[in-house]
Image (cartoon, rainbow, N blue to C red):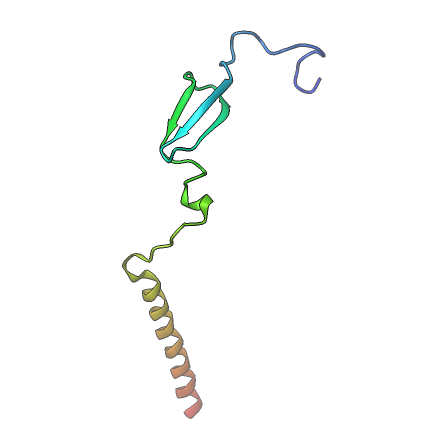
Length: 92
């Protein structure tokens, strides 16, 4: 009786959406069946797990505007400055 219903009781009728089997058709041509509350029998999608780069392993990481190079240059300069300060302190 954890859910507040008596043993053998079912869900209230006519308050839940219709949950039925539909066909999903992707722009890549892939189709599969699933269950949904979507009203039509056919759902058209632009991208699915068969063609999405994250799931196919063809994901490309783009370095926009040289951000990685800027990051490495910035911290190389900082490391050189620390080494120069240590060297100057050691000469005194």
